[in-house]
Image 1 (tube, chains in turn purple, red):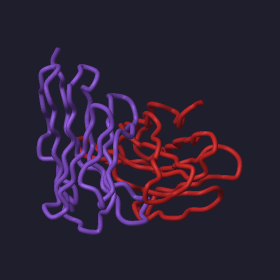
Image 2 (spheres, one colour):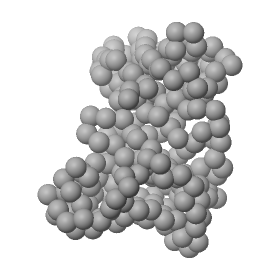
Image 3 (cartoon, each protein chain N blue to C red):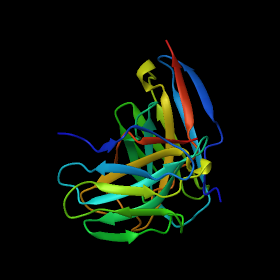
Length: 112
Length: 115
């Protein structure tokens, strides 16, 4: 049961350009959405989140957009830097739930 | 300010042996979560524990797997009679409180390889 789909397994972007990572979900009970970043041989690190009552949340170079009617969210990174090269996981959560539901991830490569 | 610690980082077991994975949460955190990541997959929730209590083990296989978080010491995920399909990365996370907007902080994981 794939409740979270990150359809692009990988993405390559030139340094300084915008990276856009997409995520689709099926469970309408999800009401809080997180993005985690993961480097090889490390655990996931929290990056940014958004509540379902908002459609945009910005933190420095990172912006997350949520389209609830389409059950779609995206993470924008601008400008992209080589240190952003990692696997990014879209992680929705249900109301009051502690269980995180991870997608398969998108591997971002930022080329210097 | 140490983060979540897991050991060992790598563990090799033969089929039928036992695997014990340890997790020390961040200081001040009393809630521990275990996740498993199979190859080419996202992390999947296994179990949620507070000190001396299992709160939710709905993601844990019914047989051979057990978890504990004693009053003193780390949380332990125990896999008895391991099989090749248990080969995966096991991640522990902790939080000060559970809740809808509480961030879970992850450890570096234990990579289990069953020969």
